[in-house]
Image (cartoon, rainbow, N blue to C red; front, side):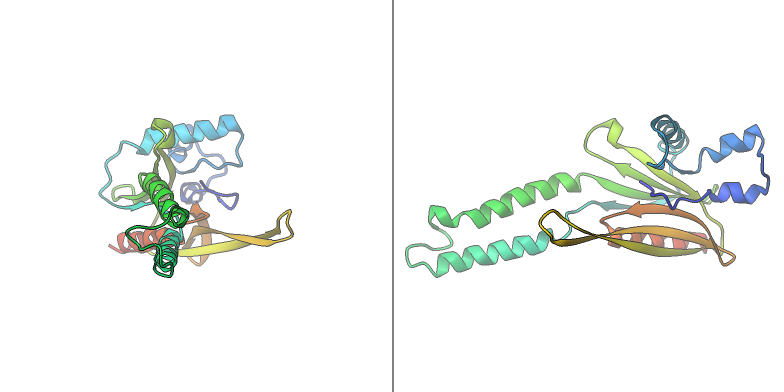
Length: 221
């Protein structure tokens, strides 16, 4: 979902009026995102409006990206290498017939693979609607209809510049260890000014790069 940096959607700035009429107000509900900074009632109202407007609308093009556990492949490689080393260095065991206490690296690999499979059933779609010149981000979860929703709808124009930006947050946990995490988002710059943000994500920088590349192609066609 989007963070507090969400500015007014491009729809608002396009009108140039302080008090848009009821038609403009209804149209604007189709754009933007359901920000977690809203009250629960406002959040649900905005989310419902986005879903009603876009969730069943067929896009002209799209790119789908499955979620994944970052760094999982390195854990797989490390545990597999450790298992082989443990069994080969023990004269009473082999990789085919290990001792019981040597099985734990394989157990880690198995459970991580199972978790990775469940996570990969979820995905993000970046949809492009050419007639409306709109980028829609749709999330598909595994917990039923409630976990499938339109995260944002952003109106773009030819000549817009899309920039992937980030901010790193650091803190010290209860054990005195220094921790950090990085939040990424896509900024829309128009005529040299930032006019919108969307696509906020804490984990999937590579996917946002793919989204930026995809949408850059669409707004230049």
